[in-house]
Each structure stands twice: as C-alpha cells, then as structure tokens.
Amino acid sequence: MTAPHNEDRERALGATGEELAVLLHHASAEMLLALLDNPSLDETQVCLLLERKDLPGEILEEVARRKPLLKSYRVKRALAFHPRTPRLASLRLLRDLYLMDLVQIAILPGVSAELKRNAEDQLLARLPQLPLGQKITLARRGPARVAGALLAEGHTQVIAVVLNNPYMTEAQILAALAREKLPISVVPAIVHHHKWSITYHVRLALVRHHSTPLASILSYLPELTVSDLRELTAPGIVPESLRKYLQAEVQRRIRVSEKAAGRSAPAKDDPASNRE
Image 1: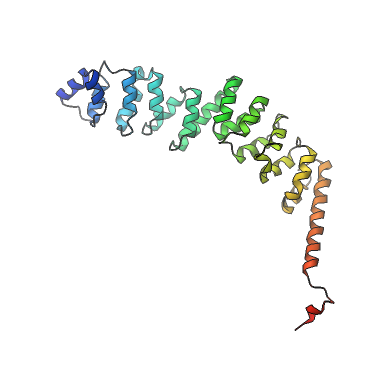
Image 2: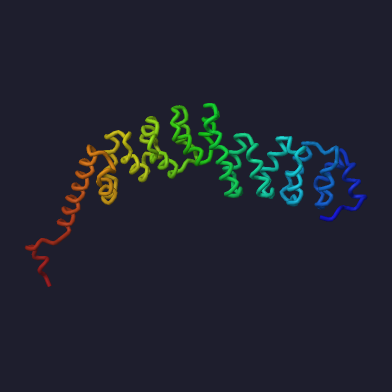
C-alpha cells in the first residue's frame, strides 16, 4: 500500500468533528489507514467506519490487528459482523462475542458456512455453564444444532420451548431420539407435539425408542410402510414384547393386500372373462 501524500496524511491525523466524520467516508484506502492513527478517532467513529459495506479489506485487516481498538466490544462486534473481514480475524473474534451475538452470526443469511459452524461450536461449548434463563432464550432463538443439544439435555422448562424453535429440524429431533441415554421427559414431549408427532421419520424413530408409550406406538403402526415394519421385526431392533404387535400388523397388511388382489382379479366362472 502506498503512503498518502504528506498533506493528506496530516489532514487525516489532525481532523476533528465534522471533518473527521466526512473523512470516514473517504474513498481512498490510504487516507482511511492514516485516519486510524488519528488520536481523536473514538469508539463510535470506528464503529461508523465499520458500517461501510464497501470498506477495503486492508482496512478491516488493520483494525483487526490493532489491540487497542479491539478493547472495545462494540468495535469487536462490528468487525466480526462485517462481511469483508478476513476469515482468520473473524474466527478469532468469535471467542469473545456475547451469547446472542453468536446466535445472530449463526443464523444470519450471507454469513459463510464456516463462520456459522464455528459460532455454533462456541455456543455448544458454553452450554454446560449457562444458567437456565439463558438456555431458555437459546431454546427459543438458537440455531438447529444448539436447539438439538438443548433438547437432548432434557430440561423440563426448555423442552416445550425448543420444540417450537423455528430453526429446529427433523434431523436434530432424530439425532436426539437416537441417543442411548435420553431424559425421560423428551420422548413424551415429542409424542404430543403438534408438528413433530406427525412426521413420518420421527414416528418411525419413536417406535424404536424404548420410552415411547405402547398406545402411541400402536397408533403409528398403520401408517408405517410394510418394508419399515419388517425391518423393525428383525431381532434386537425392538423389545420382544413389541415385536408381536409389529408382526401382527405385517400379517394384517398381507391379508388386506391379498383380499384387494382377489377382488380385482376376474372370477374363473365369470362369463365376462370368457368373452372374445
């Protein structure tokens, strides 16, 4: 980067008030770089500078290198949220962001998949230490992976909230149901949920789960495919006490299918079947 002319640099270093505010929108990267050395540049003005979406990458990189500027949380946050902040700088900044700022990074459209994933990792790492109130807040607004982890924890006050989380996915529900150790309050909450209780693959997972009430399982069986029912009847998939119900349902389906096939086939003594 070429140094600005001495006159421009002196102007950038000495600007105050309205002139400083005008220079924050200067097109020259060299002028902006000199402006960062201005002793009158305060936290608010740096944040105004970082609101520029057209800010040259080298300016963002320079701000990220300056530890005195990063002592301000507002500056740190503005830098982390800027779409042109260098990748490594963004990843470093995540470690210092507050909880709900991490949530915002994780759900904002346009944020890179890598940055979202790392923001989620930070949230997951903090979960064990969070008080219940913050967990409830996360359950309401957190990204899918965090919602899934909160569901698996099984806090009674959290479950009802997290199942209604708009970012919750079927994949996370299934992942929770696949866990060997799942708090007993989770399965009944899913069974009675207006959305997840009617999802085919969730119902299939509930049939497999040892905590699902038998009445619920029996109500699901007529809706499962014969191939899935047969798979479930293999030894070791479900308890022996449940296998007999599954096998009976398979046999019922076979009988229904055979009857339907018999009705559709023309009878041998039907005169219509002998017509040319």
